Length: 191
Image (cartoon, rainbow, N blue to C red; front, top):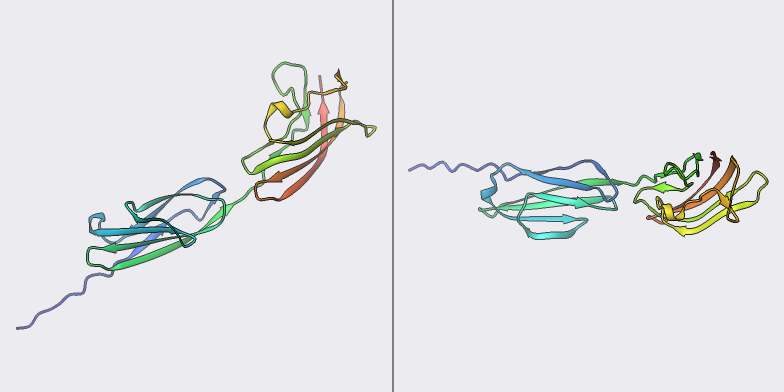
């Protein structure tokens, strides 16, 4: 008697993922395989060679990271065959700070304060100083969070409202990765 033993298709797995994400952005990573889900008995995900779950119950992984990472998946089918895949996911760190060039402290609820705005990539503003045109310091604040009105300058000096003018500011901002950047510019105080 002759028998033909056919070799099944090899087990394959691949990963579908974005090439990069913003720091702390949620990303969905998906394992794609050539067999149906019912034929898979074991799924293992790891990030930078550290197991995220083993065993896992999903061909999808939700990733939120702050450093570039290698994401790996290994699957095992009902016949004991295994397949693995990995992908490198770049985490982009954009240092975003916005410092306005004018403000109007007239208590109308619109743009009443001079303040520094930023994203979650900012750890804190280490220093913000404002000087008049003669170089006199009219405002200083140390070690405070961005985008918080409590720490903004209201256009006063020694509890007196200043006249409209151009002021010079200096700011040093520290980001969550430890890098500090300095900013120097002009801000116009208007009525």
